[in-house]
Image (cartoon, rainbow, N blue to C red; front, side):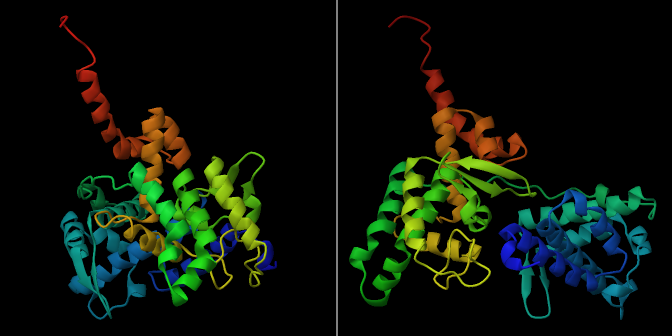
Length: 352
């Protein structure tokens, strides 16, 4: 099939499937059974992430366990899982804090360590459930605790300042910088307005195709994490920004294979996640020096504004595409504190 006829997500799945096969070729042979088994319930992106995590685990065994001296990763068989004890898993967690690869030093924070531990538990559970191993030491080791971080978001005046800056910062630029700004201003304004006005993820944004935009109902069709499709609706400000950009885009001829992409790079290709992250950081630095603003922080800004406006945590969870409302509560319920403070002075026990 001609790749140009495939959607962005169909193309990504093909690329990810091929990439996963390459990774699995470097791992123990028995691991393929696990990744084949989880295929119906996971995305290709998730399986690649798990494969990388499990490869780190097997590398730990080669680096730290005398049993595997002078052996390769492909020499490891499923019986090895039965030989490990809880203390070995604890040593693995310690190893994850900092370890060396061929050309680099790697470190893992709380979230990365938790993800790798979750991947290991799932891997062990598969072989234990199928009675290919008799023990499961991974369940005897606690998953690292994640400490909550304060939500970083733009205030209302900062949001307005960001959009104004994107629209007018060219007045202070000269030379090549001004030429580049004039070339990308309309696209960047539409892109940032869309992120701020819908709360979609940056990966969902770059995956949008022209046919995913529906001006009749003011909605966009996004593919959420896990592969589910959802219509996300937008308001008048987003509509105007998108229409202005699409008028400009109609005069651009994308390169072969990128004809359907909504947002194009200056090379006339589908814009990538890294490019969006870079442009958001570039503009945000000009309006706040105390907050590290990323596309995900624009998502937090939208979620905060929606919750403050509606007080409906379930609506926020649905619009943001959270499968579990507890994920949303963890991030936004802290804002209830201010409402509780107001409640303290709302009831008078005696007349003044």
